[in-house]
Every structure is written in C-alpha cells, then in structure tokens.
Image (cartoon, rainbow, N blue to C red; front, side, top):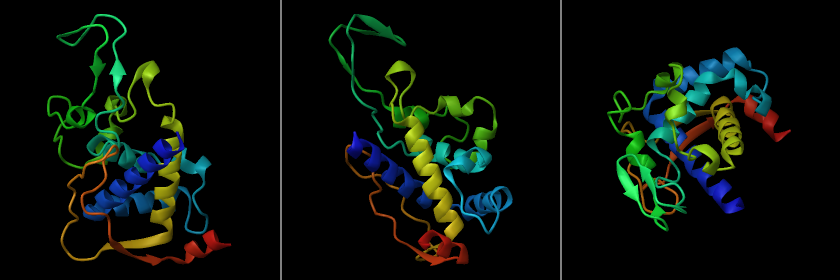
Length: 200
C-alpha cells in the first residue's frame, strides 16, 4: 500500500511539473492563483487546497493525460455480465485502458491537448477515471489528491522554474507498473525568498 501510494504520487508530480514547464502560461496562472488566494508571505497549507480550483484543474488534466496506472488494477468477474456491448464470462480478468478512454475524442474536446480550463465546466472532473470508479475505486484517492496538490502548490510557490533549453520537454511514456516519463524530468529552478520559511 505504501509503495502504491508513494510511487503513483511521485510519478504524477513529475508529469504535472513537466506539463507546467511546457505550458508556461498555465504555470503563470497557477502562480497568480496562489499569490491571490494564499498571499506571497504565507506558505500554502493542506487546508488551503479548496481555495485553489485552478491548481486542482491542473492536476485533474494531468491525471487525464498521464494516469499513473494506465490500465488501472485488474478486476475479476465473479458472474457472467455485460460491459458496454461485450459479454464477459464469469472468472474473467478485466483490464480497463483508462489511458485510451481519457484520450478518446468522442468523450473529450481537443483530447490530446493540455487544457486545465476544461474542468471549469461542471461535471467534467467526474469523467476522469485515473483512480477507478465506484466501490472498487482506489481507496487512496483523497490522500493522493491532497499530497499531489500540496506538493505542487509548494513547488510553484517556492521556486522559479525553467526548462534547460528552449525546446519543449519530451512527454513520451516509458514502461512500468506505473507510467513514468521516458526521459526523466530535468529542469532548472531558483529558490524564492518564501522558500526560506520551509527550512525554518
């Protein structure tokens, strides 16, 4: 349980930061939200996350494009059933390709683009299935959302971020139980004065 919770959160944070560095206008908007809602002299706290809807939209959009478990966990049919138009016999292992569902243009406008603003529309966030759905959903959902939101909020608040070169970061996936980046994230950062408060 500990490994599943830490690895998926770490992978998600790496994808979030990669998307933000490839979309500096989104990073700027997230920074402005933090400055407005939290202030420049106070570090974001876990209780502040509800005041940061745009940050939550960034995380939802990252989970849509880069789900940490692209096939979710395997499920097992205890009875004959029908899923969509498929008859599934009893004792079948079922894998859900959430990566494919999240990129399906039938369900998402401009499906391959990183657009956190899409989640400003009511109900859109309910279409993200990165943690599964229903009674078999990942029990770590709320912990992961808080951990990732809190960490990314602090990273944005405490540092200025830049790519190593003018080129966009490679966003290809690699193999693994979780879905890491093929080329690990390497960027430059400069600590802001507020970062000194973390060390105290």
